[in-house]
Image (cartoon, rainbow, N blue to C red; front, side, top):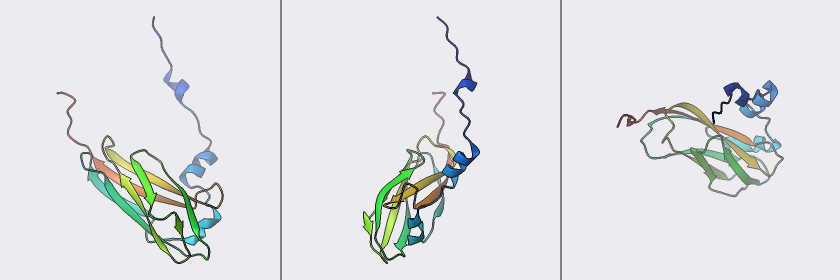
Length: 141
């Protein structure tokens, strides 16, 4: 029995406005409370390197606490955690992002979406631009 599938049948066209909402989402009102030292980090590593941790420090510049509900990343090769579940006014906190380059050679931009108690939109979007050099090629062995 021979089966065939057409590759074009698997493509899905995403409307431009929906794509733009993923690339540059509308932020929640809590976004004004975040004062980050840096929102974009550039890094270079090799595919065989151990996972690296990058830190995004911020301060709550508002007059009410920020409850950290979720940190979502755009790839399973990147995980993120915040050192505090609630950041009080004037307090500092750190979001630590761990990037695992194994199996991901090339240049990538990974994002972290920070969700707080305010609405369904992210309160902050952080990015990690990574240039991962390819590891040894063992495919012929």
